[in-house]
Length: 436
Image 1 (cartoon, rainbow, N blue to C red):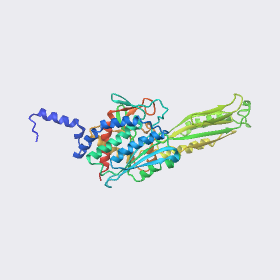
Image 2 (image 1 turned 90 degrees about the vertical axis):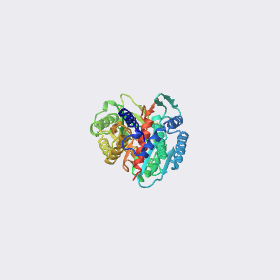
Image 3 (image 1 turned 45 degrees about the horizontal axis):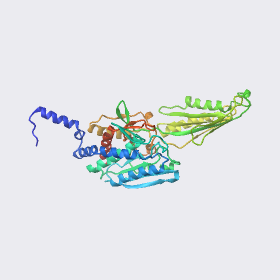
Image 4 (image 1 turned 45 degrees about the vertical axis):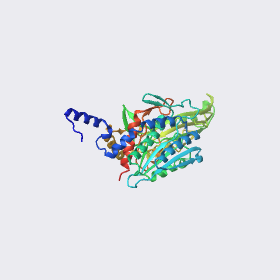
């Protein structure tokens, strides 16, 4: 027993204990060990991060995606997971990692979601990991190789503290999140199947921040594309607007997209027009980056096409807005016909009370780690993601990955200081979820 001889000494020791997250209020002895084990992972995590970032795993670089997959499989096998590689040749993609850890069966069954690919293909000039003080820069360093590293570090800390053995965890790491293979019914079948055998989902994509504060996400908006196609009577421009010829394809295109803006809008939903073409001939190119239109000032346009996207907060809202868009298209100007088609895309994960309850539990973890509580991020500030495919099946939380900036662009960065607290958050949250 240590005897302190002065009040000053007592206060000094108390100050040290309060400053150390391992002694924050509410942590059991085992949880203190867990937090210390998580803190010890940072050096190894940074080495792993550099290795993964320097492997090009652009979605279409199948060999690179497979190499990142092999690295993750080796980490998970060492942690006692039953690991499988699911080839995705049917959808012209590399494949997915699916790993299962059987625990006691008494806690909540967790689904951890991540992805192996990045948006940076081998022809991108942005290829190498660079560290500048507390900032790491590199392709996919934030989206989401930082999240992969945090996932492994949290699981390793759980193993070291003895909390992993009771945890029932399934991990799905897709190889094509940035450019999902079609049909989605094939490329997301394993993820959906895993969700049906789980009680909650945790997505390890990047940690969102506002005004320097960590934010939590319980929702992700959908992302689907639409194509508007128009044909119309053509003729000499002097006849435009008359009853026999009508208005042409260009005016019909303008009417429809402006009516979308006026009549189809709903809270938390957006629909963008990516490009529009109209003329005597008009057609999109194969790469879906635009197209060609030709015509003359004295010829009424006979063809028009527009492409855009639709983002909603719930799948019900997706159907509502699609219905409004179809109704607008179905009222053509004279001399024109129009049709609209919607592609498969990423479904929405709507906010739910069950997900808010998970956030409340996460904020208990934050309190006990001495961290500030996390507020809900506005869903309009977060894009679509794989958790959307299971949002109607299980509640979930988004953003267990690293903080950073510039995702999807050269110069993408990660805040190295976020590794430590995100590893501790994930490890402690999962350990508590694994308990009866």
